[in-house]
Amino acid sequence: MPLNDNDTFEVDQNNGLNDSDFNMNVGTANQEGLFNFGGAVQGISSGGNGQSNTSWITDTGGAGGWFNGNDYYSVDQDNEMLDSDTNANVGTLNQAGLFNFGGLSQATTSGGNGQSNTSAIEDGGGAGGWFNNNDEFRVDQFNGMSDNDENMQVGNISQTGGLNFAGVDQSITSGGNGQSNTTWVGDTGFSFGLGNGNDSYWTGQSNNMFDNDANANGAGISQFGGFNIAGAGQSITSGGNGQSNTSNINDFSLGFGAFSDNDSYEVSQFNGLYDNDQNMNLATIQQAGFGNVAGVDQTVFSGGNGQSNTSNIDDFGMGLGAGSSNDEFSVGQQNIMFDNDINTNVGVIAQLGFGNVAAIDQSIASGGNGQSNTSWIGDSGFGGFGNSNDTYSISQANMLLDNDNNTNAASASQAFAFNFSDFDQDIVSGGNGQSNTSTVDDA
Image (cartoon, rainbow, N blue to C red; front, side, top):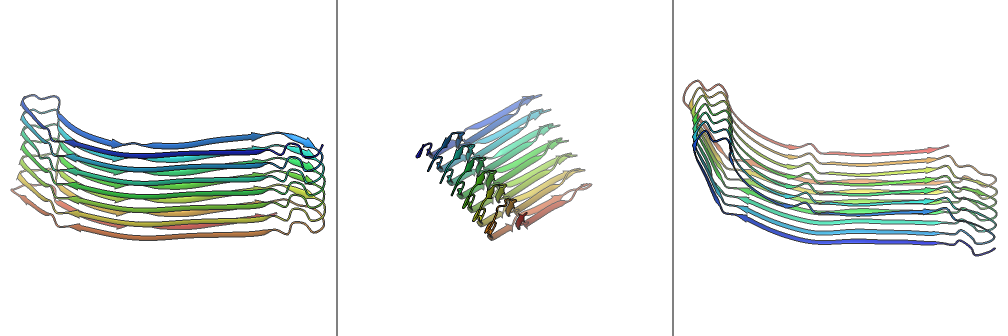
């Protein structure tokens, strides 16, 4: 019968999140005594938001006649997030005693947001007659994120004693955002007749992220004692963003008859990342004692962004008859990244003592960005007269603007005799990579 099994599938999923966190710790922690087995810890954490959309469509319907099985599949998935975290730690930690087995720790963490869209469409329908199984597949996936983190630590830490087995640590971490889109379309439909199996596949995937991290450490660290087994460390980390788009289209459909299996494949993938990290370390570190086994370390790190687009189209469809299997393939992939890192270290480091085995280390690192586009098209379809006149179009682009500004203005001093380790100050920026890979296999 005509006009049967012309199905319409529409999925619309949306997540919207507006998260504003403000945390402040102004407490003071004091620990004094002999044989302290547990240390003092101050921690502030905010973030960890997640959004996900998942859809699955399976169609195995079939019909006979004219104008049947012309299905329409539409999936629209959207994530939008506005996350503004502000963390301030102005607390003071003091530890004094003999044989301290537990150290002092201050940690401030924000970030860890994630967004993902996943969709799958499986079409196994069959029809006999004219103008059947001319299906249209449309998938639209979008992730949008604006993440503004501000972390500030101005608390002071002091550790005084003899034989300190646990050290002093301050850490600030922000970032760790991720966005991903994944779609899979599997078409195994078949049709018999005139003008059948002329399918249209369109996949649009987009990630857009604005990540602005501002971290400041103005705390002072002091460690005094004899034979300190564990030293003092400060670390600031921001970055670690990732974006990925993955599209898979597998077409095993068969069209028997004239003007059949003239398919159209279009994949559009985009990543846009705007990452502005500003890290500042104003802290002062002092270590004084006799025979200190562990030293003092300051680390500032930003960067580590990645973008990737992956597209895979497998066409095993066959149209047997005149004017069949004239397919059109179009793939567009684009990565755009603006990465501006500003890292500043103006802290003062001093080590005083006799026979210190471990030294003082300062390091600043930014960079490590990567962009990649990968496209693969495999076409093994065949037909009869006037067939297999295929068109392939692939466009791949990477654009990266990376501005790194690293400054180390800290002063370092080491005094007294028989110090077995030196001072180390390192600044590293760069490590960017771009790649485009395209493969067309027409059998």
